[in-house]
Length: 116
Image (tube, rainbow, N blue to C red; front, side, top):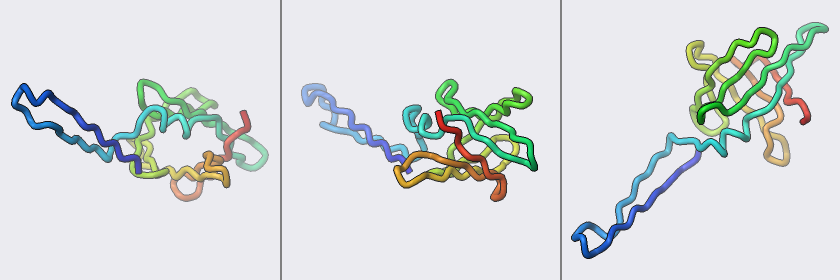
């Protein structure tokens, strides 16, 4: 979970408190979303299909390469997301170096990240 704490300071001459703290635990920054981007491959039988994840307007968007359909992927917590409108859970799996290497959709759909 990403925790952002912002402290705003005002001049003591204005008669305002010296500091005010704003905390938001549900914000995930665009820079953080970029860790989840890339091209992912699933093989069904002897056919491969691809999913492209990109950050668009500060949101994670999955594009089904086979038909161009775009799906909004919303952050839940940690490496857990959900496909908006379908409520499919997505879990991003990290490798030993901490980079995303695969995703699991709805508990069974395994997508492997392609090397860039």
